[in-house]
Amino acid sequence: MQKIIDFHAHIGEFTGLFNVKMSASDLVELNREYGVERTVISTFPNDLIKDAIDRFPNELTGLYWANPYDPNAVKGLREAISHGFKGVKLHPLFGAFVASDEVVYPIMEEARKLGVIVQIHSGHPPFSLPWSIGELAEAFPDVKIAMIHMGHGHAVYIQAAINTAKKYDNIYLETSGMPMHTKIKEAFETVGEDRVLYGSDIPCHHPSVEIQRVRVSGLNEEQLNRVFYENAKALLKL
Image (cartoon, rainbow, N blue to C red):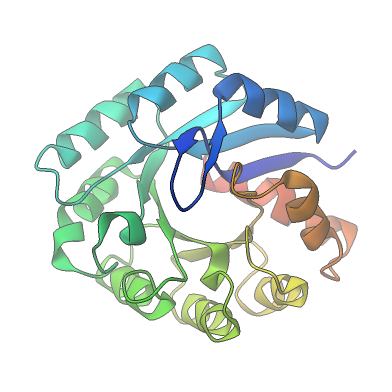
């Protein structure tokens, strides 16, 4: 059976526009059903992640959800990493900041000091377009940035995500919610075999759909193993 690390999922309740929810125990149960070995999760408040990774240390890995406008964000990130979190999550759309804005710099500088990854949402103007994530990557070339959704649902943004990642070798691309299965293979072949990561975006998407999209992308079994498992394992230093 294919080993899988899900690089992008959430727990908690997301009302309004999304109207979805997922508990840590339900997430673990769902991923056991689909053979997912480990899942990278983020949410707000961050205490939900802390409790989840304490309960399921062998199956859940936490990222610290950072609000750049919060004066305690850098301190919070530092404390989260000391507790076992593996990196930081930035969501420009939720936080209403452009990805490359200087308000993000203190968090990026702390991520650089700590040697941890930055996961950042992409695909929604004006805040989280691939070009602005590229500007952030250029400003912090020694910080590894995972561009979640690799442009999301718009063909122009998807291609921009690939082109941007080709330009900046510290950008990784994650597959969830991106509808064009062939672009996964294109990214693998042109961006780099070590820089494409499987993710589900549970509970907004379902692993059955997200896994199948990667499976039919045209990659062979060895390449699929990199996308589903080895790349995330290396990036997370597991």
